[in-house]
Image 1: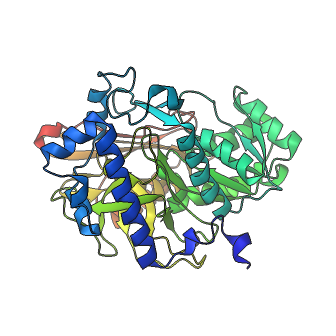
Image 2: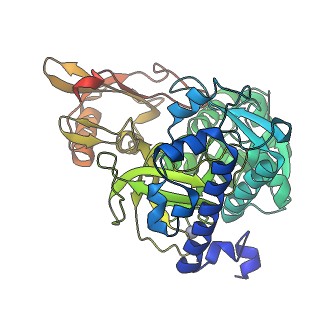
Amino acid sequence: MNKEVQYWNPILETLPREALEKLQLKKFRRIVRWAFDRSTFHRELYERAGVVPEDIRTMEDVRKVPKVEKSMMRTIQRKDPFPYGDALCVHLDEVTEFRQTSGTTGQPVYQPDTWQDWEWWAECWSTLLWAQGYRPHDRVFLPFGYNVFVAFWAGHYACEKIGCEVVPGGVLDTRARILKIQELRATAMMATPTYVLGMADAARTGLAIDPARDLQITKITCAGEPGALVPATKRRMEEAWGAKVFDHAGATEIGAWGFECSHQPGGLHVNEPMFLAEVEDPDTGEPVTEPGKTGKLVITALDRIAQPCIRFDAKDMVEVSDIQCSCGRTLRIFKGGVIGRADDITKVKGVLLAPSAIEDVVRSMAELSDEYEVVIDKKGDYDRILLRVELAEGVGADIKEIQAKLATELRVKTNLGYDIEFHRYGALPRYDVKARRFKDLRDKEAH
Ligand SMILES: [Zn+2]
């Protein structure tokens, strides 16, 4: 295929590794210098670590620069200028966008962007949407509540930039959104996996619409949760909608850093010309480079200027791989995408447990619905994992066989035993946007 047709940016997306790393280092030095010169927060942070921008000469030197954690961002926002604090590197007048984090793990963090930053957001999203096959002929429906969270705002702007036709589904309810998709014959949409499955359920049960048969959606871009790269969840979404489902990873403080391309290589490409992704051992902080090994993501947005994101501890766990994607991009791939939050991937009975592994087993069984909950607590001196699952609609009450199959699969895939609770269809909580299915009730101090 013609390169100009295949890639949004044929040069950057196919750079040889050596040239790519050279570009990354150049940009990294530039953003460190920018932050050092223009923000009190960064200058003090670097001075305390005994680092000045001139010390960064090689890729190895990158690790000399101190990491930034979300909790630090919360603290600095009590300082001037209001409401962002002293990590701001531009004059307040230059800020054109306000966003904030969802605050599911604590007090929200405010995020300023300049217009240049906002164009950069749209460029990052254009790269990923183009890679997923979005083209000017697409009519893209956004079933998303346009509000203070960044979510699909940048997806909207990127669709316009590419030349797609964008239908904002803002304050419409789920039912009205489905009907609008049908009425306009929309060809693509973006949502969290939880909402993609929820919409399909609502279409079938409430409107007698089978999305795979009656709607013309061919592509769905997911964000906000890892589900689109959990094989069984991806399969459920693709079957429900008769569409290709693609994952994407990003965050308010970071940007849109990773995407699955249309070749679906089983992982996320890192948008490396725009981001420097490092993987480190969560316990020792040592770099993880060996394929097959997992670690915590430390990430830098190389071009974001208002409130730079330099060596940000994303608390996301990823698996290093040497997968060469058939799409021809030279960008590295994290196998399985974001495989969990560093806080959620926890040792239970001495075994490392990733919630996505449980999800994959539950959703691979047709007898079970999309919903489940995992609660880890203590039973006497021992860790107990309670898994609540729900029978699929119309599945009878004889659960013995289902239970045995589920327990075996879980044992094989996660090396752990579970207390399993069955519920009738509709009994477990439904989530509108992001689900909170994983609860660890053990005393954290003891682990
Ligand atoms: Zn690819």
